[in-house]
Length: 371
Image (tube, rainbow, N blue to C red; front, side, top):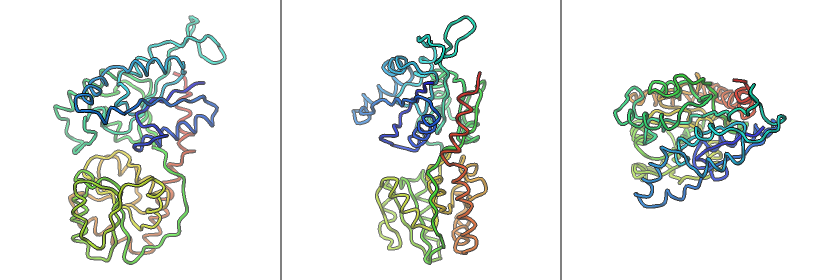
């Protein structure tokens, strides 16, 4: 059986967390005997002028003829689509309309009339880009006029897949509130994380804090700056990333500023840290950085935003972005060796739940289920 995976984040040249999920899907499907091919268009146009970029974004409301042709010629049985910006939101729908041309019963299912069935299409959600043009959602309760227009345009272009796969119930609910997928079957399938690495952990003195991400207001760099201003206990803070608020941390000797780096080096920084801080001010779905921290047993203190609480499921510390004292208490609690050990074990349990093999065991029945 052939499975085509359509994505705008190629696992061979990853730009975000979606590439890791595509890679996990490709690996587990191949190990199960499927023939798999990943399709990802070029994004060289992102370096072009504003007008050219605008033209590509407008083009996204239709189907990419080159992708429709390329995937259809390969003749898959199943199409799995991921983030479609740059791929054409109508591309999967157009592909599904095409009937398989081969006539080998051993490879394809046939209807009672003898005609080959249409390609089955599964769409995987990652974030809010279907209804929020910026991809950043400050307030999940609001449904702005801009979101309404965007949702109507993209919803009409996308159409109705055979199944929606979402990493959190929160993200699925946010789409349905805005008119997406109300009559489409769905499944909540948490994202796969990195393989577990056992690390001996005891809290250091001073405690070593870590932040990974863009140093911008939406990712909580302002909250982070306020936090270190009020944090009375001894600490060291490592920041991995850049952004408009980087200057706010440049003159504090307790802070080490590092540029963005490959994931293996980020993982090493996580091994050396005591606590990961995720102070996001926007509604996050299932941050990859949390799953990466879990894989090395790194305790997490995170914002109560979006699907973060659902992702952690009683692990870590969840704090309001408006309650600075809650963040201080959480960090202080992790200085206790017993509490720290409990949190380390809990994060490793979370990592086991997100293991790629577990993900594969849950994914395969969804793809092979009839109807």
